[in-house]
Image 1 (cartoon, rainbow, N blue to C red):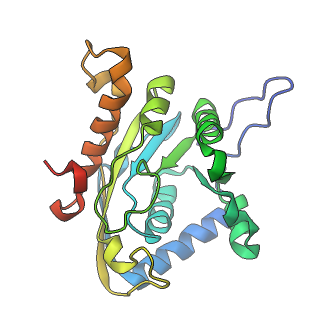
Image 2 (cartoon, rainbow, N blue to C red; image 1 turned 45 degrees about the vertical axis):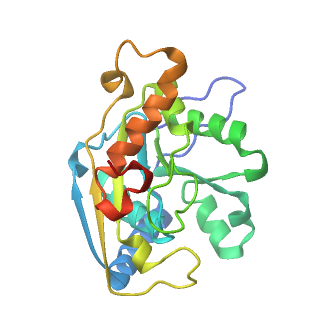
Length: 237
Protein backbone atom coordinates (compact mmCIF):
# COMPACT_ATOMS: atom_id res chain seq x y z
CA UNK A 1 0.00 0.00 0.00
CA UNK A 2 1.45 3.32 -1.04
CA UNK A 3 1.40 6.40 1.14
CA UNK A 4 0.06 9.81 0.18
CA UNK A 5 2.40 12.23 -1.58
CA UNK A 6 4.13 14.93 0.41
CA UNK A 7 2.02 18.08 0.69
CA UNK A 8 2.97 21.15 -1.29
CA UNK A 9 3.99 24.12 0.85
CA UNK A 10 0.81 25.87 1.92
CA UNK A 11 -1.34 23.16 0.33
CA UNK A 12 -3.90 20.89 1.96
CA UNK A 13 -2.79 17.95 4.07
CA UNK A 14 -2.76 14.76 1.96
CA UNK A 15 -5.72 12.47 2.45
CA UNK A 16 -5.18 9.41 4.65
CA UNK A 17 -4.75 6.20 2.66
CA UNK A 18 -4.26 3.82 5.60
CA UNK A 19 -6.64 1.09 6.67
CA UNK A 20 -7.16 2.08 10.29
CA UNK A 21 -8.38 -0.30 13.02
CA UNK A 22 -11.79 1.38 12.71
CA UNK A 23 -11.98 0.71 8.97
CA UNK A 24 -10.83 -2.89 9.48
CA UNK A 25 -13.54 -3.35 12.10
CA UNK A 26 -16.20 -1.79 9.84
CA UNK A 27 -15.28 -4.00 6.90
CA UNK A 28 -15.39 -7.09 9.10
CA UNK A 29 -18.78 -6.08 10.47
CA UNK A 30 -20.00 -5.31 6.96
CA UNK A 31 -19.07 -8.79 5.78
CA UNK A 32 -20.93 -10.34 8.71
CA UNK A 33 -23.97 -8.18 7.92
CA UNK A 34 -23.79 -9.01 4.22
CA UNK A 35 -23.57 -12.73 4.88
CA UNK A 36 -26.47 -12.56 7.36
CA UNK A 37 -28.74 -10.62 4.99
CA UNK A 38 -27.89 -12.24 1.64
CA UNK A 39 -26.57 -15.25 -0.21
CA UNK A 40 -23.66 -13.25 -1.55
CA UNK A 41 -20.97 -14.04 -4.06
CA UNK A 42 -18.13 -11.87 -5.40
CA UNK A 43 -16.58 -12.86 -8.70
CA UNK A 44 -14.63 -11.56 -11.66
CA UNK A 45 -11.38 -9.63 -11.99
CA UNK A 46 -10.73 -8.85 -8.31
CA UNK A 47 -7.06 -9.68 -8.69
CA UNK A 48 -6.70 -7.14 -11.50
CA UNK A 49 -7.61 -4.10 -9.39
CA UNK A 50 -4.42 -2.00 -9.13
CA UNK A 51 -2.75 -2.01 -5.72
CA UNK A 52 -1.23 1.44 -6.16
CA UNK A 53 -1.82 4.67 -8.05
CA UNK A 54 -5.14 6.38 -8.84
CA UNK A 55 -8.10 4.10 -9.55
CA UNK A 56 -11.78 4.76 -10.20
CA UNK A 57 -14.17 2.01 -9.12
CA UNK A 58 -17.53 2.64 -10.84
CA UNK A 59 -20.62 0.62 -9.90
CA UNK A 60 -24.37 0.65 -10.42
CA UNK A 61 -26.44 1.85 -7.48
CA UNK A 62 -29.68 0.02 -6.73
CA UNK A 63 -29.73 -0.27 -2.94
CA UNK A 64 -28.39 0.99 0.40
CA UNK A 65 -26.64 -2.38 0.55
CA UNK A 66 -24.30 -1.55 -2.33
CA UNK A 67 -21.76 0.60 -0.47
CA UNK A 68 -21.69 -1.80 2.49
CA UNK A 69 -21.01 -4.83 0.29
CA UNK A 70 -18.41 -3.20 -1.93
CA UNK A 71 -16.48 -1.54 0.87
CA UNK A 72 -16.49 -4.63 3.04
CA UNK A 73 -15.24 -6.98 0.33
CA UNK A 74 -12.98 -4.79 -1.79
CA UNK A 75 -10.98 -3.03 0.95
CA UNK A 76 -9.55 -6.27 2.46
CA UNK A 77 -8.94 -7.69 -1.00
CA UNK A 78 -6.95 -4.80 -2.46
CA UNK A 79 -5.48 -3.58 0.83
CA UNK A 80 -6.42 0.03 0.13
CA UNK A 81 -8.87 2.49 1.64
CA UNK A 82 -11.73 3.54 -0.61
CA UNK A 83 -12.45 7.27 -0.83
CA UNK A 84 -15.98 8.35 -1.67
CA UNK A 85 -18.18 11.41 -1.67
CA UNK A 86 -21.27 11.52 0.56
CA UNK A 87 -24.02 14.02 1.25
CA UNK A 88 -23.06 16.32 4.11
CA UNK A 89 -26.30 15.51 5.95
CA UNK A 90 -24.80 12.14 6.90
CA UNK A 91 -22.22 13.88 9.04
CA UNK A 92 -24.89 15.42 11.27
CA UNK A 93 -25.98 11.98 12.52
CA UNK A 94 -24.14 11.16 15.79
CA UNK A 95 -22.86 7.65 15.04
CA UNK A 96 -23.07 7.55 11.24
CA UNK A 97 -21.32 10.91 10.99
CA UNK A 98 -18.37 9.74 13.09
CA UNK A 99 -18.00 6.54 11.09
CA UNK A 100 -18.23 8.40 7.78
CA UNK A 101 -15.73 11.05 8.84
CA UNK A 102 -13.16 8.42 9.81
CA UNK A 103 -14.02 5.88 7.12
CA UNK A 104 -13.00 7.63 3.90
CA UNK A 105 -16.26 9.48 3.18
CA UNK A 106 -15.97 13.16 2.23
CA UNK A 107 -18.94 15.51 2.74
CA UNK A 108 -20.43 17.30 -0.25
CA UNK A 109 -23.15 19.94 -0.25
CA UNK A 110 -25.58 18.65 -2.85
CA UNK A 111 -27.08 22.10 -3.38
CA UNK A 112 -23.73 23.21 -4.89
CA UNK A 113 -22.14 19.83 -5.47
CA UNK A 114 -21.04 19.92 -9.11
CA UNK A 115 -17.86 22.01 -8.87
CA UNK A 116 -17.12 21.15 -5.25
CA UNK A 117 -17.49 17.41 -5.76
CA UNK A 118 -15.45 17.43 -8.97
CA UNK A 119 -12.54 19.25 -7.35
CA UNK A 120 -12.55 16.91 -4.38
CA UNK A 121 -12.76 13.80 -6.56
CA UNK A 122 -9.91 15.03 -8.75
CA UNK A 123 -7.81 15.71 -5.66
CA UNK A 124 -8.39 12.12 -4.50
CA UNK A 125 -7.10 10.81 -7.82
CA UNK A 126 -4.26 13.30 -8.10
CA UNK A 127 -2.99 12.04 -4.73
CA UNK A 128 -3.07 8.46 -6.01
CA UNK A 129 -6.04 7.09 -4.07
CA UNK A 130 -8.98 4.82 -4.95
CA UNK A 131 -12.12 6.80 -5.77
CA UNK A 132 -15.37 4.87 -5.44
CA UNK A 133 -18.30 6.30 -7.42
CA UNK A 134 -21.85 5.56 -8.51
CA UNK A 135 -22.00 7.16 -12.00
CA UNK A 136 -25.81 7.30 -11.88
CA UNK A 137 -25.54 9.78 -9.02
CA UNK A 138 -28.39 8.29 -6.99
CA UNK A 139 -30.09 4.99 -6.28
CA UNK A 140 -32.22 3.50 -9.02
CA UNK A 141 -35.95 3.44 -8.11
CA UNK A 142 -36.42 -0.01 -9.66
CA UNK A 143 -32.95 -1.56 -9.71
CA UNK A 144 -32.36 -0.88 -13.41
CA UNK A 145 -29.45 1.23 -14.65
CA UNK A 146 -30.22 4.90 -15.14
CA UNK A 147 -28.33 7.22 -17.46
CA UNK A 148 -24.82 7.88 -16.22
CA UNK A 149 -23.64 11.38 -15.43
CA UNK A 150 -20.53 12.58 -17.19
CA UNK A 151 -18.47 13.45 -14.09
CA UNK A 152 -16.74 10.07 -13.94
CA UNK A 153 -15.78 10.21 -17.61
CA UNK A 154 -14.45 13.74 -17.19
CA UNK A 155 -12.32 12.70 -14.21
CA UNK A 156 -10.92 9.68 -16.03
CA UNK A 157 -10.12 11.74 -19.13
CA UNK A 158 -8.42 14.47 -17.10
CA UNK A 159 -6.40 12.20 -14.79
CA UNK A 160 -5.79 9.12 -16.94
CA UNK A 161 -6.88 6.92 -14.01
CA UNK A 162 -7.95 3.37 -14.88
CA UNK A 163 -11.62 2.52 -14.35
CA UNK A 164 -12.80 -0.71 -12.73
CA UNK A 165 -16.45 -1.41 -13.66
CA UNK A 166 -18.55 -3.27 -11.09
CA UNK A 167 -22.05 -4.72 -11.45
CA UNK A 168 -24.11 -5.44 -8.33
CA UNK A 169 -26.98 -7.78 -9.13
CA UNK A 170 -29.94 -8.45 -6.84
CA UNK A 171 -29.29 -5.90 -4.10
CA UNK A 172 -32.46 -4.04 -5.07
CA UNK A 173 -34.53 -7.08 -4.12
CA UNK A 174 -32.84 -7.41 -0.74
CA UNK A 175 -32.99 -3.73 0.22
CA UNK A 176 -35.05 -1.74 -2.29
CA UNK A 177 -35.16 2.02 -2.34
CA UNK A 178 -37.76 3.33 0.11
CA UNK A 179 -37.58 0.21 2.30
CA UNK A 180 -36.51 0.94 5.88
CA UNK A 181 -34.94 -2.47 6.52
CA UNK A 182 -33.56 -5.20 4.22
CA UNK A 183 -35.35 -8.44 3.39
CA UNK A 184 -32.97 -11.25 4.45
CA UNK A 185 -32.20 -14.20 2.24
CA UNK A 186 -31.96 -12.80 -1.29
CA UNK A 187 -29.10 -13.53 -3.64
CA UNK A 188 -26.62 -10.74 -4.41
CA UNK A 189 -23.84 -11.17 -6.94
CA UNK A 190 -20.99 -8.67 -7.30
CA UNK A 191 -19.13 -8.92 -10.60
CA UNK A 192 -15.85 -7.05 -11.03
CA UNK A 193 -14.77 -6.21 -14.57
CA UNK A 194 -11.24 -5.76 -15.86
CA UNK A 195 -9.70 -2.29 -15.43
CA UNK A 196 -9.44 -0.14 -18.55
CA UNK A 197 -8.25 3.32 -19.52
CA UNK A 198 -10.38 5.54 -21.72
CA UNK A 199 -7.37 6.49 -23.81
CA UNK A 200 -7.03 2.83 -24.80
CA UNK A 201 -10.66 2.25 -25.81
CA UNK A 202 -11.98 5.52 -27.23
CA UNK A 203 -11.65 5.90 -31.00
CA UNK A 204 -8.52 7.95 -31.74
CA UNK A 205 -10.49 10.17 -34.12
CA UNK A 206 -13.15 11.13 -31.56
CA UNK A 207 -13.67 14.89 -31.38
CA UNK A 208 -12.77 16.54 -28.09
CA UNK A 209 -16.33 17.80 -27.66
CA UNK A 210 -17.74 14.29 -28.10
CA UNK A 211 -15.22 12.42 -25.95
CA UNK A 212 -17.01 12.92 -22.64
CA UNK A 213 -20.38 11.65 -23.91
CA UNK A 214 -18.81 8.66 -25.65
CA UNK A 215 -16.73 7.86 -22.57
CA UNK A 216 -19.79 7.97 -20.30
CA UNK A 217 -21.65 5.64 -22.66
CA UNK A 218 -18.69 3.25 -22.73
CA UNK A 219 -18.34 3.19 -18.92
CA UNK A 220 -22.04 2.54 -18.38
CA UNK A 221 -22.17 -0.22 -20.98
CA UNK A 222 -19.24 -1.98 -19.31
CA UNK A 223 -21.16 -1.86 -16.03
CA UNK A 224 -24.32 -3.06 -17.79
CA UNK A 225 -22.45 -6.04 -19.24
CA UNK A 226 -21.84 -7.26 -15.67
CA UNK A 227 -25.55 -7.14 -14.77
CA UNK A 228 -28.48 -9.43 -15.56
CA UNK A 229 -30.72 -8.25 -18.38
CA UNK A 230 -33.46 -6.94 -16.06
CA UNK A 231 -31.00 -4.49 -14.46
CA UNK A 232 -29.38 -3.11 -17.61
CA UNK A 233 -32.06 -0.44 -17.94
CA UNK A 234 -31.36 2.21 -20.56
CA UNK A 235 -28.16 0.33 -21.51
CA UNK A 236 -29.95 -2.86 -22.47
CA UNK A 237 -28.73 -3.61 -25.99
